[in-house]
Image (cartoon, rainbow, N blue to C red; front, side, top):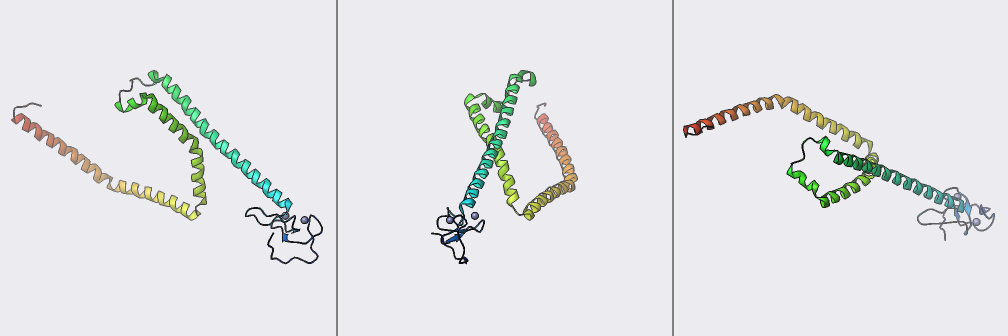
Length: 204
Ligand SMILES: [Zn+2]
Ligand SMILES: [Zn+2]
C-alpha cells in the first residue's frame, strides 16, 4: 500500500484507468494513480507504470554505457600489454645486436629464471590491465574533490618545488665550495697516508 499524504482533488481519476480511488501521485510525472498503477520498487518513490518503465530503460542504458567503458578500458590495457610484449620479444630477439656486451650484472641473473620471469609477467599483465581503471579512479577522485583543494594542492606542489629549487640555488655555491674543499682534504689525507707507508718502507 502506497502512503500518500498530499492533497488529491475529489474528482481526480487514475490517468491510466480514468476511474478508481486515487492512492498516490507519480513522483516523476505527477499523474494520479489508482492502487493498481501506483508502483513502488525498492527505494524509488511512487511511480506510474510509464515512469517505472522509463526508470528501467535509464538503468539499462547506464549499465550498457558502463559495460562499454569497462571493455574500452580493458582494451586499452590489453593493447598496452600487447605492445610491450611485442617490444619485449623484439628486444630479446635482437639482444645481441642491441647490447654490444652481454649482461654480466649478477642482479640481472634472476631474469634468466623462467619461474620468476613468468611470475613477474603475470603481475605485470595484471597491473597493466587494471592501470586504465586506476587512472580513471584517480581522475574521478580529483574531480570529486572541491576545486579549491585541487587548486591549492597544485599551487602548493608548485610552491614546494619552487622553494626546493630556490633553496638549492641559494645553498648551491656553499655546497660546491665545501665539495671542492672535501676533495682537497681527501688528497691531503691520501698524501699523508702515502708518506706514512713510505716511512715504513712501502712504496705505493
Ligand atoms: Zn509517471
Ligand atoms: Zn490505474
